[in-house]
Length: 168
Image 1 (cartoon, rainbow, N blue to C red):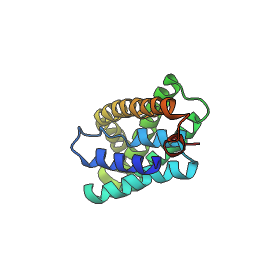
Image 2 (image 1 turned 90 degrees about the vertical axis):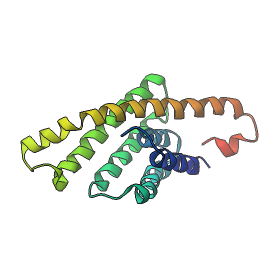
Image 3 (image 1 turned 120 degrees about the vertical axis):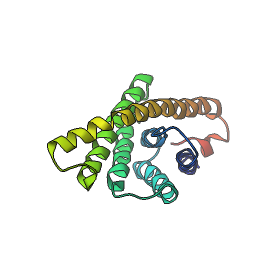
Image 4 (image 1 turned 90 degrees about the horizontal axis):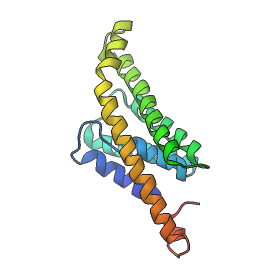
């Protein structure tokens, strides 16, 4: 159930109007890594990206953008044993930086900028405003996903709903 909710929420929040680069995908990937099995933690961001990209448009950098989210999910697996505000915030910032590095390298590699050192530097410099917004959205959505889940978990852990709503 959690897998479907995360995929649907991610698709909706990518497709509905929002500020540029202000999406929950990295936060969902981190959250999935922390609470789902490794298999599902990777399937969730890839599924929501594949489905939403059908509506938003495919591009020649998808291997890098989708790959950046897979790396965020793998980073989230390091939160499985110990989830604290500082660790989640740190993982959110680190996942944003990883995504920035991987996706912009892909933009440069796929020919959106000249294949020179100057072109690579220019690609990263011009993407800094996107990094700012992406990092902010990852921090906010991570706080929301982790916070809401932990709040609900504390309320239903000894009820029949626990088997449906909570991960093992």
